[in-house]
Every structure is written in structure tokens, then in C-alpha cells.
Length: 126
Image 1: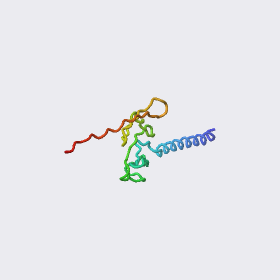
Image 2 (image 1 turned 45 degrees about the horizontal axis):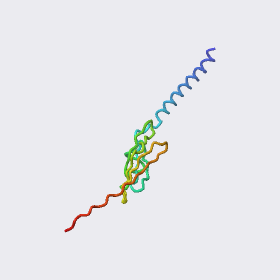
Image 3 (image 1 turned 180 degrees about the vertical axis):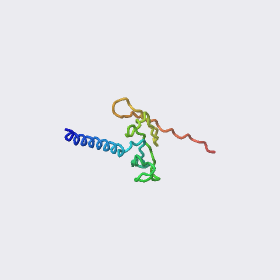
Image 4 (image 1 turned 90 degrees about the vertical axis):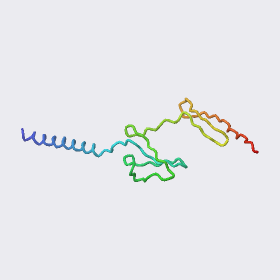
């Protein structure tokens, strides 16, 4: 009877040991969740170019160019946390100043009011 149980026990031992080794190797090869995401944003067009999450200093995609600005996005559980849109946005135009305030509805909309540009005061000349 021992001759029948010994091969089965050895097989079970090998299978559980192999599963443990596979689980351990999978845990070490899983990529670490990044703490920051980096991107280069074009100052002219606003186009964004992502950098490698775990190698921000030496990314294979290169450094930000002189016409780009580097930004960082924090992460939560490996996913980027995007900041909420601003409550008030002010646009300064030639014709006046436009102030836009976010509305409370479900979609992201703003109500804008335009104030006329201040007229230049006349300076007396002598």
C-alpha cells in the first residue's frame, strides 16, 4: 500500500512546490505601480507627450523640449489622479475681460460674462 501512496504524495509535493515558485516569480516580475506620471506639454498647442512612469528622469522618450513644459500627475493605486476643473476661469482679451464660472449641472459647463476693457485715460500734453 505504501508503494501506491508514495508516488502520489511525491507528485502532490512537486505540484504544490511548483505552484509556490510560480506565484513567487510572478510577484517579483509584476511591475511596481508608479507614484507619479510625467508628461511634456507643448506651450503652443497644448499637446501632451507622456514619459515612462517608472523612469521619469531617464525616459526613453527623451526630455522635454524648450517649447514644452514638464508636468507631473500624482497617482492613486497606479492610476493618475486628474485634478478637478477650476471653478472660475478668466480670459483677458483685447475687447475686454471674460470671466467664466462653472455651473452646478451634471455636465461641465461655464457661464461667462464679459466686462468691457477699460479705456485708456487721456494724458495732458503741454
